[in-house]
Image 1 (tube, rainbow, N blue to C red):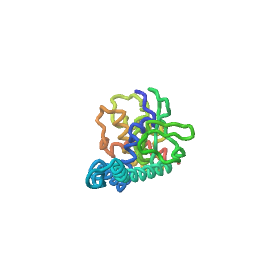
Image 2 (cartoon, one colour; image 1 turned 180 degrees about the vertical axis):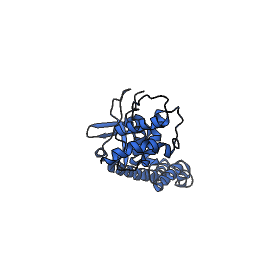
Image 3 (cartoon, one colour; image 1 turned 135 degrees about the horizontal axis):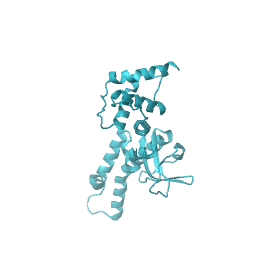
Image 4 (cartoon, rainbow, N blue to C red; image 1 turned 90 degrees about the vertical axis):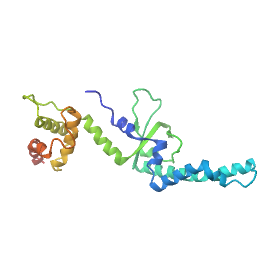
Amino acid sequence: MADRKSLALFLWEKALPFTQGRVRLAPDEMRARWEVAHRNFWGNDVKSMLPSGQSSALEITKAFAAAFKPRQEINKAIDEWVTRQLKSGAIIGLGFEPPRRMNSEPVIIPTACWRNSVRHDSDKLRIDGLIFTEIRILPRTAAKQIKAAWEIETVPPHPAPKRGPRGSAMDIAEAFEALHAAGRIDFNASAKSHYPEIRNWLQYHHPKVGYSAAKPTDETIRKTFQPMFDPSRSKL
């Protein structure tokens, strides 16, 4: 089996580049204001602020400054918002510590590093002598879902006894043992709550068998999973 990516690299690849993500993750109202401010700046906003007739260089400069103000204001508001989210941990930031090499791994940037408001036009962060580059961000809720997918991919198949033709019962038993060894079986939960993860594991480790989100059926999984699950649960 090929080497798996680290969790940090897996998250970084799924995350949004900082300069784009700060806008895409912003609340709807902020994002709408940002779109209007950036759409209008090179259109009628500047023209409407120029005096009629021939304009001097100073008047043109003032018109551009006035038209640019809404962009400055919404960029500042989004910068402050995303900084608060990063400081609270609601949004996670990942980046590389320079110099980046071919085998470099990104790191999850500690929340304490987001003390100051970040710049909207940069994907770098400098704080207390630390430097992070190529920063990407994603919501913590999304990170949890991505982590669950990564864990499914990185749980190794558990060796199963060889007893004649292989069937779904042996595959399900193998999935149970592998997930149990990885600490993914919660004996305080119901057996059925584990069925989606069993199917995910089977699809990943036995892609040619034809397993899916609906196959094996609940009843097929239950016949093998329940007798393995119940004895361990009764020991709690």
